[in-house]
Image 1 (cartoon, rainbow, N blue to C red):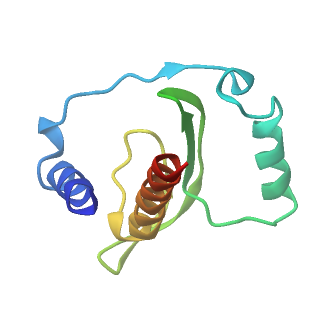
Image 2 (image 1 turned 45 degrees about the vertical axis):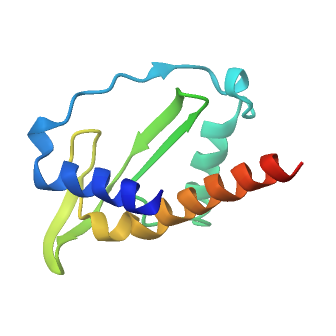
Length: 119
């Protein structure tokens, strides 16, 4: 599973124009099992400086987009600073910073699948 995910991410980086655009179906937070105030909670955490340095947050569940938020921030390309960037859904990003998140997601999926199989 991890190798497949790495190949998928890697191919998008090598040849980004060959990727087919995917359109998310949007859904309100409550329809996907989230609290209705999830966006305002995120805003509160950022305002209270409990989380910082985010470039983007994309929340999806059950194949539906709950919300997405993009921020400004410093970025780099393979260790070379490219300055302050206004991030958005089409902004290219140095993928080294998301590796840990992708691996955690894959581990969580594998753990959930194993839990379901054992139950």
